[in-house]
Length: 436
Image (cartoon, rainbow, N blue to C red; front, side):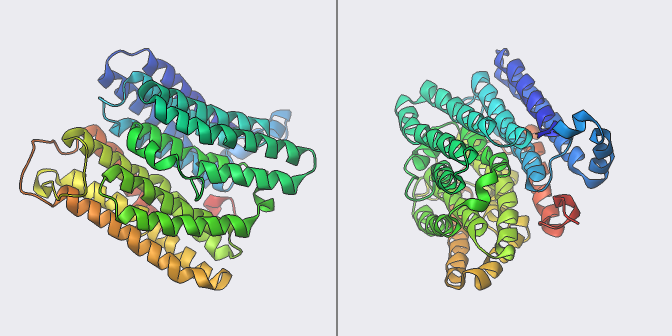
């Protein structure tokens, strides 16, 4: 099955990447990327609303084309497309110009197109090809800016692609159990779960932040198109998820480098999502999906705000308090709101997700719920430590600007979506999720 809307979104992003790659001026390249990302986000959002989806469905029914094309994907794939486009808009709008020349912006747009492609083409060889393509795009960018990091990245992700390919091939020949195990191992590498996380902290520290966030967005569409999820070794994967969440939360709060703290914070939130998806409780699964939706928007907002501050001030340290809130209030507030929303604090969509995740673990896996509460609390401490150290630690002002209009535009959309999502959360069974 091919979903038409994600395919259209991917085509828009690919066309934008070609236009950006041919542009010499960095500011013009970013404006082109923002306009095209806005168009892609508009298409994905409008087409996913139930009324419009209801109008499109009859247009593809009763014909041969209707057997091949579903205009709008169902369930989680619907929201993967929206989240990919909104987070992608944030990335291209806030990527610092010095670190993101047009060639890098073009690769980011291609990464976003690959992520949208996961929601369009389904399973099998296409999933493996898109997975490999996204890894290759990142490797090519890393090779340009840091050859040692590129080798480390390849050492993890080449085996990951091979495991995914072998698992998909085994499943296609009737060996679903063995195939699911290999795919699960590939996902452990891709999500940087313990013990296959060695590549991720260095990747976040040394790669362009836009590439880091765009590569993190890619699994959104990937997970919605894997038929083998029902055959996964769920308990084992969930155990790795909670282990990663705990270990990464502890490591994040003790870091004295901002980017490294961000890396472990994102690992911890990813571990929480994996734990919830691997559990037996439907409530925990709903919580994991809401946590996933919130983290897919809030953590990119937190990361890109950090990158914007780094571009203004230089390398950021958490060892010495610095920054003047009064001089950059909008950037500081956006940084704090995105950070707290990403780790599940109210009033945001992430709070609803973490609440359901903890509530579901009480019945599905009782020993885990105190641990989950501790992880949420420690991650909140990390966010507050970063905020107070970077924005409220000094009366000195270094001349950095507050948010520019393009950055404010993207952050307003993301923060507004998080607040609206908290008031109207979407879970399995709702009309927006393809339920009754």
